[in-house]
Structure formats: C-alpha cells, structure tokens
Length: 409
Image 1 (tube, rainbow, N blue to C red):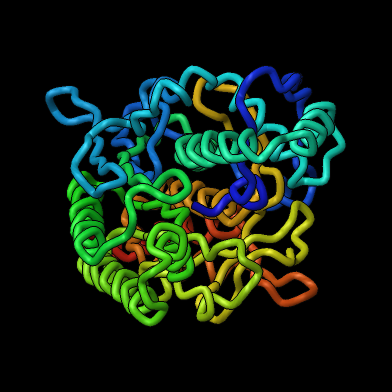
Image 2: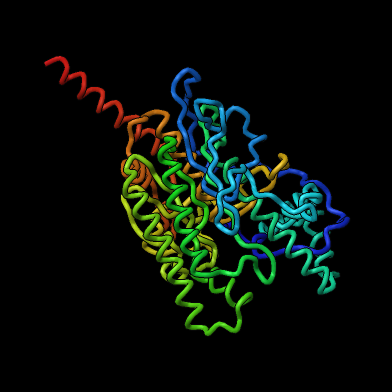
C-alpha cells in the first residue's frame, strides 16, 4: 500500500495514548477546486461501476453504493494473506487489534498530521508517546498500527474515489498483505504463484462485473518481497532471495498485463509509490505500459512537485496527494498523503467522464486525461478534471452528431 509517512511508522502498546479527535482541516483550496467539476447524475439511469482493488472496504459507510448481484449479494472477491479465498469486505482482525479500533483511528489521524507537518495536539501527544516507548512497547505498537493501517487503506481509497458521486457503485476486490515481525507468512515460490493466480481471478471478477475504472493503489514492488525474506528467512542466500522477489514481480506483472489487455473497455489506474525514486528502480509489478493503464504520481495541494513520489517515464499523470480528506473504518475523517490518495482522485475524474460519455473505452479515458492535463513549473502533467470531462462530453456529442447524420442519409 502506498500512503506516505504513516505507512512506515507503527505504534506502542495501544492503551491510553491521550490523543484528541482530529479538530478538522480547512478545504484544500483554490488550485484543485478550480480544476474540478460537478456532473449531473441520473438516478434512473444505469449506475457506473468502479473497482476498488485494495485491502477491503467498510461497506457500512457506503450505503446504496456497493454493487450487487441480481440476488442482492454484495459483489466482493477477497483473498487473505496466504492468498486463499476469503470473500469478506474487510480482513478479519485479531481481537487484540480490533478492540482498539477507535484508538487506532486516532493514531492514524495523528500520523497523518505528523506526515503533513501539522502541529496538532494529537500529533504532539503521539510524538511524545513514541519517545517514551520501551523496545517491547514499540514492537507491539508497530505490529498493531502496521496491521491496522493496511486494514483501513481500502476504505480511505473508496471514500476518495466516490467523493461527490452518488450514482456510482463499487465492486470490491480485497487483497491482504503479510503481518508482524518477522512477517507471516514468510514468502515462498508457492505463495508467489498463488498471489499471481489470485490477481488473475480478481481482475477477471472486476471486469466480468462491469467495473469501468479500477483503482489499484498498490504496486507489489521487488523491495517489499526482499524485505519480507530478509526478516523471516535471513539464512537464505541473498541471490536466492533476489531471484524469488523478481520471480514474484514478473509473474504478477504477466497476470496484470494479460488481464488488462483483454479488457480494453476498462481503465486501470495504479499508484507509482512513495519511495522518492524512479519506478524502474522500485520495480513494482505495475511497471509496464498499456493503452488502458495509467500510473499516477503525486504533487502537493498547490500542484508543486513532492520529493517522495516515484517518477519516471511510466508515470504520465499527477494528482493531489497532499492531505486528502478520507474516512477511516467507522467513519472518522483523516487526511492521508501519498500516491495512494492521488490515484483515486484520477478514478473519480474518470467516473465523471463516464457519466457524460458512458461509451468511452479505457484507452480513450487515458488519452483524454493525459491530453487535457497541463504542466506545473517542474514539468509534471497535472490532472484537470474539468477539461477532461468537457472533452469527454464533446466526444460524445460529435459521435451523436455523426450517428444522426448517418441515419438521415
């Protein structure tokens, strides 16, 4: 997952940390507001479906917006950390973590403030607590917050993707990462094959259930698998660890490329990552190019470059990744940063384009988003939702005019 700094931190014995609720945040402001647009949605027309391919979604926050089967079942395809089918909307947290959900939400709010250089009471309280931790407290804190931050990731992504869209539904594809230190499960070739199979299955599930835009705020980078093996299998020779990590990335990449290429009507949108490096160096499984796939970088709330977004020729569009409002499980509001939150902003824009022109292909959505972008002072192409929606509308009108002309002959 790719939220910024808070995803690299983890916490202390969860007890009373003494945090106060987030006092609120002013609106993002003029730069991005001026580039956005609201669209008219028809409650009687067919609903646009977007895929939230992430860690799961708190469905209670999105009443009436979870896509369902004809028999009324929520459309969810899930896999647990061992890459076994588990069709639940969210992961099953152990009681030792779930009992502290309200406290953990406040911790994540505080980390988001720290990440955004906001001097809030909760940020100061958490910083003080972190300084006082014993090694044992730090280990327990890291495990709980690391697990919960991944658990909450998909809910925040869904909230951003659906912002202002009441007639859009989500199809949920849930994936789960390893947990703990040393991590469980410890990575193996069998797990790599299972993960690739699960990704093929979930991609097919999203396409068959008519998701027109799919949010992928993850990358499956080589370094993550190396980190897992370094901690849980340190006696394995370095060369073998690297071979397994690369095998995993390449196997997942093939599954993604093949599945996306077979679904030209869908736009897939991925996050470039937050390591502040080139995508080629990070080597995520999403490092490839297709006409219906976009890899997204993040800029700040004023459209300026950040020093933590991954970059490179594969990254062809940037959006705001700076303290984007998003709800946590249960509903409290936080302000995460990272390419994970820039990505669903693009998905939200694509859904608006589909609302004015539902016949757009995945490649057409990508092309219009890129062609209507403008560049900031350092050359990053920035999302311009209003221009993209207007271009989609004009394309629909020109097609309609041509159809009317043909029918009148």
